[in-house]
Image 1 (cartoon, rainbow, N blue to C red):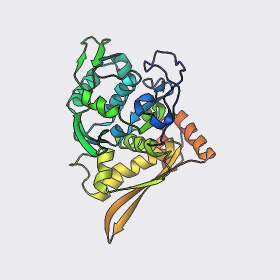
Image 2: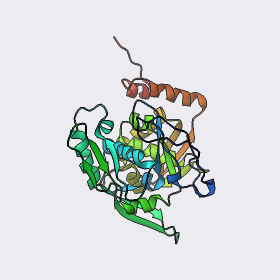
Image 3: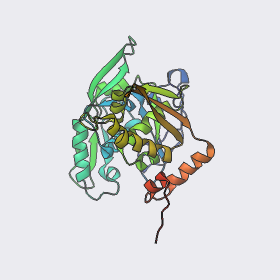
Length: 301
């Protein structure tokens, strides 16, 4: 079992609810992802919270690639349902909560359509045999949207997905404030990968280029050359992660001749001063962040 997370206090996923502390009685020796609680206000970008995302959905291979807003929306729906996950349950959430600063529901409707059509390959182990399995599954189950602007969204998860999650014993605890600050889906996916792995005994892991592309959610027809993938997806994600999170993350290229054969992801926690600088950056305005990341000086006249 992964040691990537620990038991935290449990709170309601509804952002209007006041956090309420409870104790989790499940022994660590058989702690499941579903036994770990979301905390704070993970659906409110103006407040701090945490999202529990099972390892099987962190390392998912998207067949229908999601963009940044769709990935954030899926994480929100997962967080809202997480503390009350049950097979066949219908979850209700106000569209205004998901809409954020947008006055129109057009963006939401498009995202709902995309999520409904999205499916992925989820890797897991059969709890009876221990054999590695790959299940192809829709990320979101049947859902209903009230037409009114201030209406609600009702949604489900497939029972087959729940059966995978109820046996999950690895997870990432995502800080919602960081998720909302990251500006690309590649950064969010890389952040999820690190949060799943940060407390493991290992501090590195090797991947083929295709595996890494899949984990970042790069579509098959995008950035086919390694140089383009590295320049437009991998490096920008690394720069954001190293600026805004409490981790130092690197990706090294292992070559055979002139060909990149595999990528080695390494991670470690920042020293206190560096972690403090990252927290200060998270509290600053987004304006000028890319300039500060590049180390250039802004002159405001």
